[in-house]
Image (cartoon, rainbow, N blue to C red):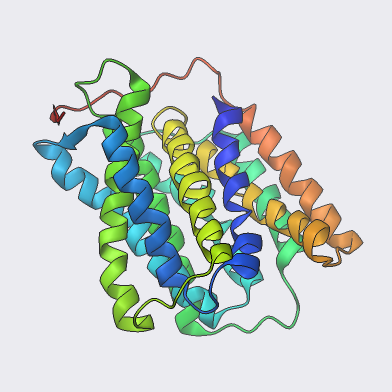
Length: 299
């Protein structure tokens, strides 16, 4: 379970390379829309299920927090902050999640997870932060807001669990992931049109990039992520997110010829050690969150 959850942020770490090499420039909201909406509709079709009862508003809340609002705030942060500053703020997620989980779920985070979070934060700072980084107040607020948005979505996802009415848990997760991505895509689409205008003509490289991000980096990655969210302690799940900047940095070095200093390599090693230590902090016997009522199968 833990290893599969770790695949999700590793896949998200490929987003930078795909975006810079294959996608149209300066279209982050379009990228977010085309990542989320097709993936969401595909998963909903695969699960053949629509929400019912409380799951209508729960799917709307989770889709807004984890996808729609999160992607939009990342867009603002990306334009107003160096990526290193945004990554360090994102690395505060395990602590925010730990606090929310204690307040909403009554789960006290283990000392090992908190220490691993501190080590991971230091590692991310070594890996991506630069002394010349500018601190724009609006960008900082957007990056912090995006981190809090997904942290709250993670804790609520654990609280509400997976919907009932499915013969297999895998199908329930397909539906849950599809609902959230669809909600997020629907929210992002008008924002993309309003801020960025009509989509440009797409070449085959653009199509390949969007297809990869939608099918692999979004549908597949978020399915694995929500699988972990509904099973593992929230603070522990968030630790896996620290892998994303490590993968992005390694791919930049391998594929784009970007240099990595000794300090950056030490930061990457510290992040990996923190994730391994945090993953070992909870018994694998942790039970999935209980399912809540209210889903109808549509065929």
